[in-house]
Length: 194
Image (tube, rainbow, N blue to C red):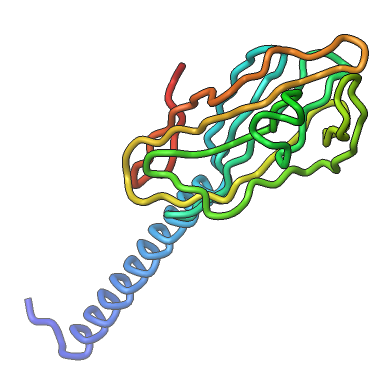
């Protein structure tokens, strides 16, 4: 079959246009898939875990993780109404032996990258038998945040300490260095199952 040069060029041009259109659609599809995957990653909830000990539920999460840094959040919630937690600024042994600070520390491949802060104001109360004022948070939950950074992949431990008290019911037994384990991988931090 004899095809004229004009028809051959037209057929070739149509083939080129079809292939370019297909390539453009494929590229758009790949980009849409990449955008959807990125949106799914951004929408994924941060790793979270919780435990309850001595009258307080502690909920931990890691947010704003952009390797190797993020923010560790710990929410301390007294189980009973009318209970408060002590300030993070309280000395480790309390004031005259009374009270324990609300504390969050990290070990292993995680390091603190700043100071522990609380999203609640401190007020001073008087405790019978203690001469100095006691710095406490208002009754109810207290949210603390600690900037963290990783020195690589591996295991890490969050150590938590606190004590809750009530003016009417007294204090719960203090908790010191309660461990919560994490694993850091290229995919980010995950809490160990308990």
